[in-house]
Image (cartoon, rainbow, N blue to C red; front, side, top):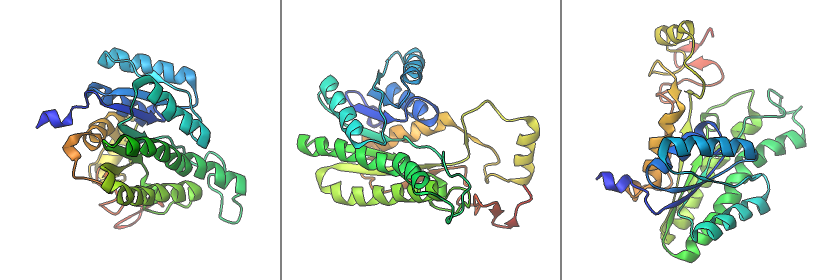
Length: 273
């Protein structure tokens, strides 16, 4: 059974792979045996992450600086991977960022430029990279896997993240429609919805006690850690999930299931925090 989780001989691209959740997924995919390409805009960040993964796994990922807001650069990313490895088996669309511009804006104040900036990073990039990757996968005829990363804000309202929430809801819908279109080609598409994951050192004792006693974040009474994304990503990219496509996997300690919404309300009523 454990052999089904191995990714030996598989070639994988991870966008947004220079830090945070992308870095941890890239590390886990590398540990599972995949040849990994990491992409982000910052070359220095990519190289530092490649060093980190090489030290942790003995396998150094290939770094390809890419602005995934640009369709041509997404095509170039896939083409460079094909030139290096001759194939592409797995596309992990992790690149994304919150409302860098226009955060907290009301709908009547949000400019076209701020709206488009968030939509391009969080939704367009997933489409561009999926299109380039699946074109090759279809022509090759040996199937493949697409793994997208969305957000709980695409499933629950947040008044401060209008464009980001809309983009991430679009990623969820794109995952489902992509899966439906490509099932006959042997190409699977699934989506991870992370929430309540920390990429920083453990929180203060006071914050942890607040979570434990009041359950303000989730029923698990703790924050998740970035590394916990890795095993889920490996599963969804491996043959262990060969009959799974078009599905959304929430990893948030039960927050959404428990009724917690990012607007500051819990199932029991408004929170005081």
